[in-house]
Image 1: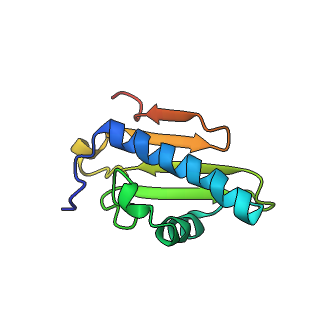
Image 2 (image 1 turned 90 degrees about the vertical axis):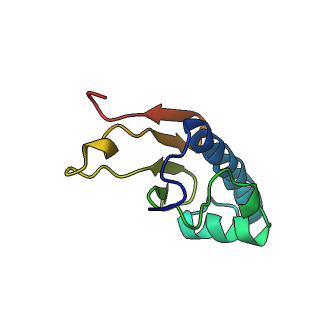
Image 3 (image 1 turned 60 degrees about the vertical axis):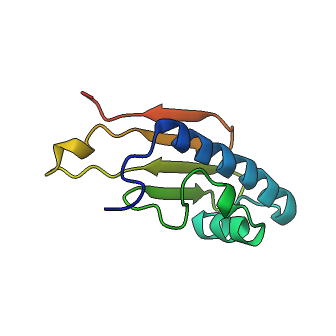
Length: 112
């Protein structure tokens, strides 16, 4: 089991706040938004990984997805713990979502 087995929702939200802010700083420097590998490398280069409320390089059991449009003008971020159909305890874990509008959404699977 990872150290982040039970991440409080506020840490998911704060991680998304950090990622949203740094996406715009990355864009200012590179004229496009960053994908997952690029934003992680950028955070490492700027010594900001230690400021993250969760370990963005070792997320287990959570997953981080950063999708960037082909022209680099839009992005979507998802931070969630994948559901295991054989483990009912994983079905109702909160997930956090955001995009280039900077609005953070929290969600849970239906029937939770």
